[in-house]
Image (spheres, one colour):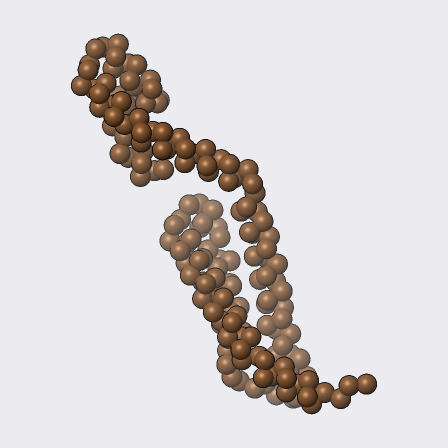
Length: 163
């Protein structure tokens, strides 16, 4: 929207393109009227984007995304702490390897994604890009967690004495 607004001609102090056209018609400046009227498709595109933004805002998608992210960050961090504690309590030591490193990396990426939220709320596009990159990378580490955790899970089940 901001980029499109920069392409509009100077409105000469008017608050809208329609007002600028009316003012140019009053002073009978046909060149300016033509220039302003040729910008109407751009103004219509801006108006459509503004309306779309309003409609999306009414849906509350940001709040839902924020709540889901908060729950994911909380549960993921809790399990990332619980897993090594459980392993240490059960085996008396930790087993450094892909599963442990992927879990630690995932918590770091989630923390990075959370840390970008205040800057995104202020409209910082770089923060938005970092937020997306951290979450996409986190999705990759989560997949690694599943792949590296499956053998651990099967080994624990096979060694567990069930009642």
